[in-house]
Amino acid sequence: MTQTIKTLSQRETQLLSTLSSEGKNIFSFEDAFKLLKLSRGHAWKFIHTLVDKGWLRQIEKGKYLIVPLEGIAAGTWSEEAFVIAANLVAPYAVSYWSALNYYGYTEQIPRTIFVSTTKRK
Image: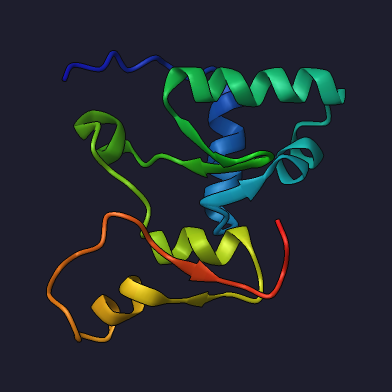
């Protein structure tokens, strides 16, 4: 699969580097909104332009994942599933087949990561 890598503007580069330097590889729309100092509508369009360019992935409504350079070139990169789970809901526990694999009770790798929580989504 060939993917065209689209360039970043200076402002896009600044946003991604600021979030990365703060350790926010997974961030919320509110995090970006505070840094961009744009109206909500313009900030939303700004973020979705980065999604369209392939520099961000939306993991749920209002939460985004910064795709590293090696991931853009390879086209197959993904953040560790347990890291994403920790950013989606709290409290949480990796459960069912995923937990069995994690603790070495099965060698089969699940295609779906199961997470249990006491909260409703």
